[in-house]
Image (cartoon, rainbow, N blue to C red; front, top):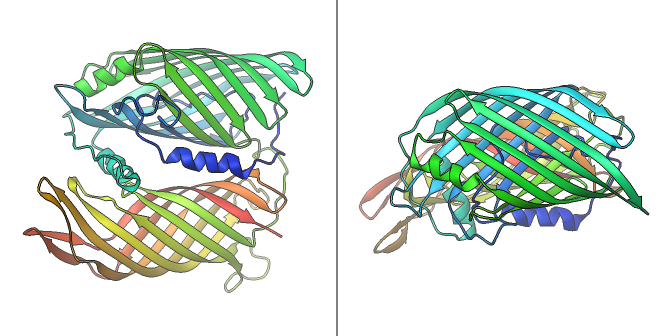
Length: 465
C-alpha cells in the first residue's frame, strides 16, 4: 500500500510553508526525542519539522515550548535517527525563566506490515536528552528581531541535566471506503518516552483520514497528551502542565508539505507545525537531470540570519566523468542576531559574497541524497544596535572582507514541474572576517566582525532544462 512520490507539488503550497516559518512563538509541541507524528501513508526518508503557533490561536500565549525544531531521517530500511531542539520559556509567572532542551535518539522499526488496505508499524528507540542553556535566547530573539516582535529578556533557570531516554511508537492505518478519486480511512497512534530522571511523556491519537492519490491527505481527530515527573524547575513544570491536555487535530499533506494545527480544549497552548518531507526516494530509481541553476533559501542558527544563494553550473575544476558537480554562486545574507547573552544589543549584519560549490550524490547512482562543500569570500558589514530604557542608538557601520566555507547534505523531496525540483538542506556555514573591529557606543566597547560557525536549515530549488 506504500505510495511513491512521482508527484509534483505547487508553488502556492511551498510559499505557504515559507510564510509559516515567519510566525510568532508557540505554546506546545511534539514529544522531544521522538519522531514527530506522521501519517503512515507517507514514507519518511527525511523530515524537517518546525513547531510554532502559526496555526494556533494567533499567539494567545507566548510561553512554554515556544519554538521546536525536529530532524528525522531513515538509516537503511529499519533504522532512523531523530534530533530535537526546543526552547522553553515562562514569562507570565511570579517566577519567570527559560530553559533549552536538546534531544537525540536512534530508533529501530520492529515491523512495518503493509497490505492492500492497511499499515501496522511498531518502532522502538533510545537516546539522550539534555536541558540547560543552548543559545535559545539568541535564537528566539534573533527571529523576533527579524520580524519586529518584542524581545524577551528572561533568566535561565539553574537546571542542567543529561538523561537517557527510551521510547516506543505504535501506529495503525486502515482504509475503509473509496468515493470516486478519494479514499477514506482511520489512523491510530500511541507513543511514550521515559527518561532516566523519571519523566514520562505519552500521546495517543485517533484520526479520520481522506486521501486523494499520492498527492493529498487530510486528517481530523483527537489527541491526548500526558506529562509526568517534571519537577526540577518551574519552567519545566509549567510547560508540562500546559502540554498535558486533550486537543483537536487538523492536518493537511500536499506533496512534500505537511501542515498541522493542534487546538487544545482546556489549556492555552495551542500550536501548529509545518513539516517538509522527503518521501519514497531511497528505494526508488527516479532520475532527475543535473541542475543548470539553483536558488536556495536558508536560516542560519544560532546567530539568526536569512541566506539567499543563487547558483549556476560551471566546469572549471572537475575532470571529465567526475561524480562531482560544480557551480559558481552568489551569496546574500541579512540578520540582526543578538550580541551573545546581551538581550539589549544586536548586530545588524549584511554580507554579500561569491564562491564555488562542489556536490555529488551519495551513493553515486542515487538521486535522493547528496553531499556538498563550498568556498568563497565577500564583504560583511556589521553595526551594533543598542536598546535601553532611555532609547535606542546605533554604532558606526564597520565593513570587512570575509572568507566563507560551507558543507552539508541535501535530500530530494519532490518535483515542482518538468524543469524544477525541490530539496531540503542541512549543513554548516562558517565565516571569518580578515580582522575584528571595536566600536564604542554609550560609553561601552563592543567587539564585532568575529569568526563564527552556524547551522543551516534550508531549501534548494533546482532548475534543469
